[in-house]
Image 1 (spheres, rainbow, N blue to C red):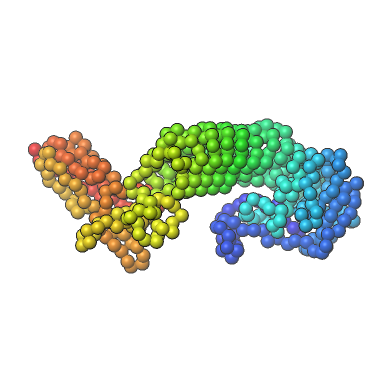
Image 2 (image 1 turned 135 degrees about the vertical axis):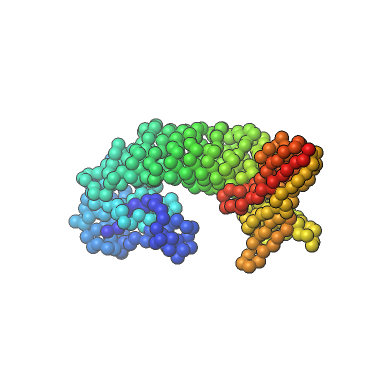
Length: 484
């Protein structure tokens, strides 16, 4: 029997092997289920013309590949059998002349159209011309006016609630009819994944499932949604998940979101304000690109943010943005030309004179965290990828100074460039942060300059400003004793 739908799941060794074999991104594989045999055949049932092909696995089953209905028909009931053979799959094919059934508002499926749990695969958004994707894209692409789905009998692998198609235990939402008239919908908490609300015409507000296994927003692109409620269990805003939602004005989310993926909110032209979650770690290319009415004002990005790719806020209104010390890399044109960008000094442009090597020139990012080293023999500063820093240490562990004395701390670093090849030297202070345990005794500036204030003792803590994410380099301490 053929696989009838394609759903999202994660994590098996088999999936990763298939990804590698087919040269697809990690986490993506195309369905490899069997197709049909022979040329398309025609049959007329209750005034409806069906084109179908033989199922390759079962000679008693067929796949419907195109349907022609009378112009005034609103309700379409798929027959259980055609010419004595069981209808197993609804697989609309352009090759067989399948066209949109724009007048159909209600579709009744049969108990014989199956969804097999063991055939769940990961793939990009369903495509009717890709082998292995059958029922779901057929509904999405060929029934634009559909308001309701039903079954003529009990289906062992799918069920319908309020005209919405689910799998048998309601853990996956298979299809929400595009023209369903409800203006608000709250997903049941049993859901662990959803095919989403792409091109939904009437739905204005959706609240996603609060199930802890539900971690990605589904595809809601090109819909008329105005408000989306994203609970704390969701960690990722999916690729183009809300792209071209031209009426979207409100995004309600919690501090659980860690990644906003490529084009997630691109071209949401009615979106005027948004508060980024404090939990945010990464923003992919073009996440808010083309949101022409999004006014970010003076933007202070979340302190946990580690990277942002190209064009993330390009085309938005933003006067000034402060890039936090946590950011390891930033893509080209992340903001519009009129935006004043205040960034950490350690983020060096790929065109910087300190970065002559190909590691940065070929980088996807425009700005990279850079370690400037001054080697004793040569005396010139040279930039290296900060990610290669293995360890840092001070030239002094203890200092005894007089009151009113000024001194600059010197930090050395070792960088592992590749196997068995390292380089060391004096590390520029711009990538370091300094903290005094007792500023009233010893004050330290952001460049590592000490100024003794009065008699006493203090400990100066020195660490990387980038000590987060992939940077896990231990800092060092300097004990300072001040004499009167």
